Image 1 (cartoon, rainbow, N blue to C red):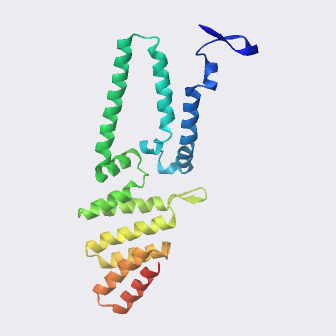
Image 2 (cartoon, rainbow, N blue to C red):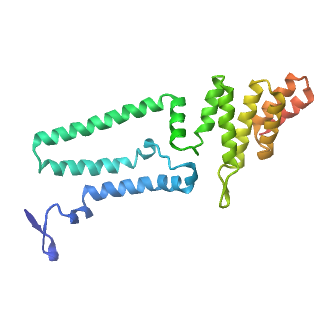
Image 3 (cartoon, one colour):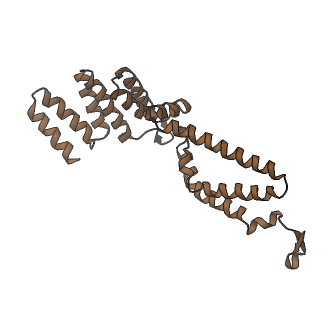
Length: 232
């Protein structure tokens, strides 16, 4: 079957020219516009690892679903009905299994962060994982992960450090917390001071120092640090 297209003459229905006004072009445009900010954000700092989460594409993926749906509807006209139904069921089964697998991954923060760290060693998931180990009392593992994070904090690519001073300060604070839990007070104080050297507005570091001074009976130092913590 064919239709007339003005002065351009005849063209077959369903040809590539239909994309100019069809659902395919709309779906592709929707996906491109929606995904572009995410892709640009990921590529801006590639040394973090090219990691993407599926939920980052919730809005833009509607365009892909429109493309797939349009393709399947066109395919239905050209293949056996039973085969088409089997194809639809296979696609649904595939996405159901993928959804279940991702849900099992997301439901456990420890498993989730271990997964990303295994995929991208540069990923900052090690900091989140260190906090989990700290809460479990696995101080050696928490310390090791935080020390690794600090190593990445010293890497400079071009004019930009791998992680910012404020992020380094946060890691020093976490490391100080690990030492404090183990009773290594001198090490803890050293880490908290290092954190403040990186970011003088780190309220958590002041608060942690205040707690240590309070336990030592150094009330003036404790009050001073509490006041600074409240200020920031």
